[in-house]
Every structure is written in C-alpha cells, then in structure tokens.
Image (cartoon, helix red, strand yellow):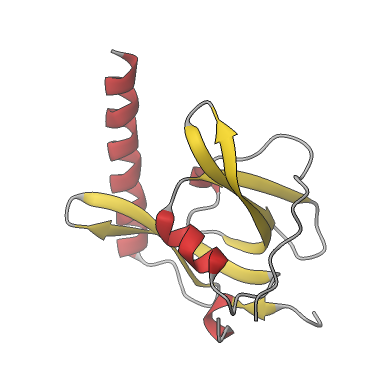
Length: 137
C-alpha cells in the first residue's frame, strides 16, 4: 500500500499520530503480542484507573477499523516519540526479557515469531498472573 512502511525499514520525520481516540472497546496488549499490526498513532499521558498510560492506536489490516491498547511501556513510548517515526507502520510487539523482568519492543513485521518469542510471552503471562494475584490480596 502506498505510504505504508514496515518498522524495520524506518529510519526512525516526526509525524505524531492524530490525537483522537478510536471508538469501541480497546484490546489488551496481550492480544497483539506476536501478531502483525499496523500502528496508526498514539496518545500519551492518558489518566486511567491504573495510572498514566499511553494509548497505542492500531489496525489489524491497513484498510481495517482502528482500535487501540493501553500500555505503560517506556520502551514502546520512546519509539513512538522518536523524531523520525512515521505512521502507519507495520510491526510485531514482542516480549523481551531483561534479567527476570519482561518488557515490550516493536519489531519488524517481517520477523518470524520464534519459539523464544512464544516462551517470552508465556513468561510474561506467568508474571502478569502472579502480579494480578498479589494485587487482589
């Protein structure tokens, strides 16, 4: 599609996404991990019940409906704020492990999802369940 780029091809010209929020329900970031999406923009500094978050706007297909997910990932936000970012871009959000902690990164949509990526997602989900259980107590 004309004007569309893959995250791996970005030379990271600022074009911040439009600040309007997509309508409808937002997905959990869990639903987009290891899936190809088209990031169409973002809104930073949104107050939520879980603190200040970033809304990442995306589409499953470039010509599809826009939806979004909330995140507090500093690494994802740093990429979205980069002066050379251009929207829309295709990407895969992958879980990365740093010591015993998990985080998120945008990666090229051309990358295959490896067994390590699946293992990292499972580790993230285990950490998340443990965290949520502790919060409820």
